[in-house]
Amino acid sequence: MLRLQSALFLAYLVVRSVAADDFTPPNCSLDEHCPEKYPCCSVYGQCGTGAYCLGGCDPLMSYSLDSCAPMPICESKTYKWENLDNAATNSEYLGNASAADWVYSGEPKIEDGNLVLTMPKESTGSLFANNHYIWYGKIGAKIKSSRGAGVVTAFILLSDTKDEIDYEWVGSDLAEVQTNYYFQGILDYDNGGKSKVDGDNTYADWHTYEIDWTPEKIDWLVDGDVVRTLTKESTFNESADRYEYPQTPSRMQLSLWPAGQASNAQGTIEWAGGEIDWDSEDIKNQGYYAAYYQDVTVECYDPPSGAKIDGDVSYDFKDDKGLESSVEITDNKTVLASLGATGLDMDLGSNKTSSSGNSTGTISNSTVPQNQGGTGNVVGSTSGGGSGSSNTGSSGGTFSQGTEDTTDGGENAAPAERVLKGSFFAVLVAVVVLITM
Ligand SMILES: *[C@@H]1O[C@H](CO)[C@@H](O)[C@H](O)[C@H]1NC(C)=O
Ligand SMILES: *[C@@H]1O[C@H](CO)[C@@H](O)[C@H](O)[C@H]1NC(C)=O
Ligand SMILES: *[C@@H]1O[C@H](CO)[C@@H](O)[C@H](O)[C@H]1NC(C)=O
Ligand SMILES: *[C@@H]1O[C@H](CO)[C@@H](O)[C@H](O)[C@H]1NC(C)=O
Ligand SMILES: *[C@@H]1O[C@H](CO)[C@@H](O)[C@H](O)[C@H]1NC(C)=O
Ligand SMILES: *[C@@H]1O[C@H](CO)[C@@H](O)[C@H](O)[C@H]1NC(C)=O
Ligand SMILES: *[C@@H]1O[C@H](CO)[C@@H](O)[C@H](O)[C@H]1NC(C)=O
Image (cartoon, rainbow, N blue to C red; front, side, top):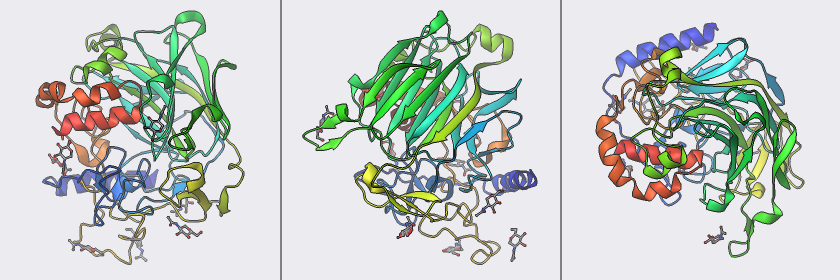
């Protein structure tokens, strides 16, 4: 707690002192890797150091395979919600998953032993991402989804190379839950599925949703019943000569986001059941849309047979194919000494290397990605996606209110539009594109 408070205070001071930061993060993609100075490609497709190198850092788009920090290994655990002590914002978290199980943005809160992800009026919602990676395992939670057109609740696994296994609830269709998967973020319209949920009201009723992920198959279970199975076998792509199956270490993420925000691409808004009503009953009565999570569990499975095991601390990528065979388990540490550090120099900014007056490692646009919230920063506001929460560090007001972005976002969004159906990652990137235009 002390650590957290001093971190917050530090963050506050830093924000005060680097008010003018005109750094524009370089973009990154599979074709255009990050430069050595800002080696880490964040999940938003932008290069930097520090938080850019932690959860979501894509080794295949970064300067080199070891630019991202190693990924903390799986830990079987049941999460209870008495407080948010085990959660940190991305300007506080430096890769020690034992000290903080989760990173979050937006305005999560605890109520009656539940984790509540909130989405206040005109905000980008909330994201709660686990810091321990899972390389096969079973995750589960009791969830009450949010409701209303354009409001999407999610419970997913997402790898740094964009393998993804999803549950998503579209707030205009409370009788069903959607299931989906992606391999390396490649869009395939045939991957999605829908399942009826007993009682036809995912908002009013608690249900248990589980993803059982093994090297051979994925089962999606609702209240203990398998509602969908995907075998690895069925994903073989002959021309690519590979299984296009989620197979790399992934983080569990819980989120609530405004897919139906007016500035989003038309395809997304339609998928989400229409535009969000920011004057809905929920907004009027409680000030926010909300999704509820309880008894979140992780059960780790053994690494796949044939895995290269050289320790028990972290996962690393040892080649750039992004396949199961690219992953190894090592004793490499996962913690950065400062926000200026990267996988290439994890100790940068520790007492030994830092000197007063050198701003390496403070909170800035090059050390903490801006785009936060349930997905990306659609509507504006702080890094939190909330309105004016001051504890999220540097990103205050970057996209404030986002109205200018919205108008041309619509026209320019054509290519993104088709992509924007279910992939959490795709939405993130498209949203960033809209914002930066
Ligand atoms: C980050 O960059 C944006 C412009 O891209 C700027 O408006 C903002 O002030 C910067 N934020 C910080 C904390 O430096
Ligand atoms: C990054 O990509 C966006 C969208 O394509 C573009 O508007 C922006 O100028 C690019 N930024 C840089 C630094 O190249
Ligand atoms: C991790 O450790 C292994 C040895 O166990 C080493 O060969 C490798 O370079 C390290 N990888 C990274 C990304 O640090
Ligand atoms: C990580 O956090 C734990 C718990 O707070 C602490 O015991 C450990 O020393 C930390 N490890 C590093 C490398 O900072
Ligand atoms: C199979 O892989 C090829 C080559 O990468 C790709 O063009 C094609 O779209 C893939 N097929 C499917 C069904 O994903
Ligand atoms: C390192 O820095 C921390 C705080 O920044 C301080 O508490 C600690 O005493 C320093 N250690 C050394 C050896 O200077
Ligand atoms: C800060 O220190 C790092 C390494 O200690 C160095 O690479 C960097 O150039 C310094 N930056 C400034 C602004 O002095």
